[in-house]
Image 1 (cartoon, rainbow, N blue to C red):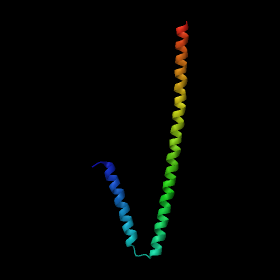
Image 2 (cartoon, rainbow, N blue to C red):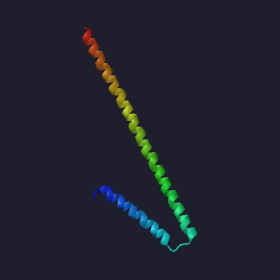
Image 3 (cartoon, rainbow, N blue to C red):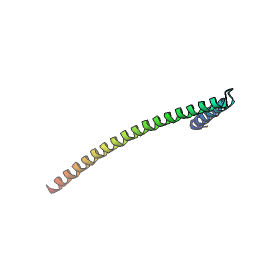
Image 4 (tube, rainbow, N blue to C red):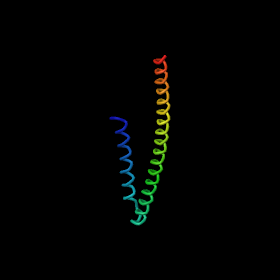
Length: 89
């Protein structure tokens, strides 16, 4: 069994256990719904924050790649110009 499958199973098991615990808890329906709504809101907030972090890192990587591409382009242009000068001489 791969580590990815194990981790996915572990997470799914944790979620199922948490849901079962919430549904079987001795609380009123109103309290349970409020708790579920708060948990969902927290999960959405964390997911939103994670997406923003990933997007920021991706933007940084794209920016770095563009800079490196420009550097490579300049070096190639210099090499081409040197070859032309050598050929003309």
